[in-house]
Image (cartoon, rainbow, N blue to C red):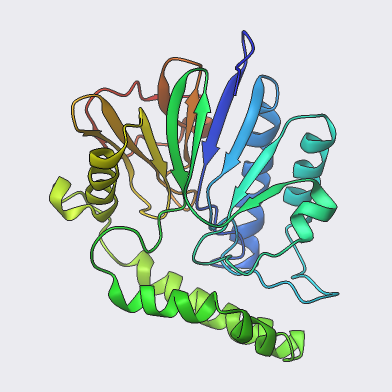
Amino acid sequence: MHLPEGKKVYFASDFHLGTPSHIESRKREDKIVRWLEQVRKDAAHIYLMGDMFDFWFEYSTVVPKGFIRFQGKLAEITDSGIPITFFTGNHDMWIFDYFTKELGIEVVRKPIDVKIAGKSFMLGHGDGLGPGDFFYKILKRIFANKVCQWLFGFIHPNIGIGIANFWSQSSRAKNMKVDEGFYGKEGEWLWVYCNEQEAEQHRDFYVFGHRHLPLDLEVGESSRYVNLGEWLSHYTYAEFDGENLNLLTFEDEPSVSRTNNSMDSRSS
């Protein structure tokens, strides 16, 4: 991908719209819309890296209500000619063709390699990669199974989405109690995964979400693994200007703890 002069590429992950309450989700949605309006001014491409919603399931004629300001802003951006790529995460893997047909957004389900301004990137949400997390890897196979998705589609939306929202929010409430601290590179499964991938093929940057902790870690001798954090408390995203990948915090939120070896971290 060629990057025109003055243009940038943006990456964000884990908005988790819909949790923990309607009021809090709406406040966060408004903030996300403000961020999108800001970055569209010089964006050449926007990558949304998964778990944008705390739950999403598309029936053939029904989608979850809400999040209309977020979707409207996405449509406005794509209509203006700025491409958006949407990665499914573990909370919104049941996005099918609605975003592509209605909003003009490419939906991606697995990590991909891209070239931007001569730099190589591996991009993905990050769930189920690297060692460990075996229970989730089994669940993901079940949830991604076409037959299971087809069967779930027969449940009335009031019941199906209600059950899924209860499960999702219970999981999120539990996970929010977990200390998201950094315990060393070897404890970071995605860092281990990036090193395994780097041994097979060089990339300049590995960019993932899912971890909920903003991270910038060296991979090998000349690569970096960047985790985008989340928008429940950190409000962090990454900006690539053709040479540097910078991890930023939106709207001058209080500084967050992050492992930072070489990244320029600043607020916008």
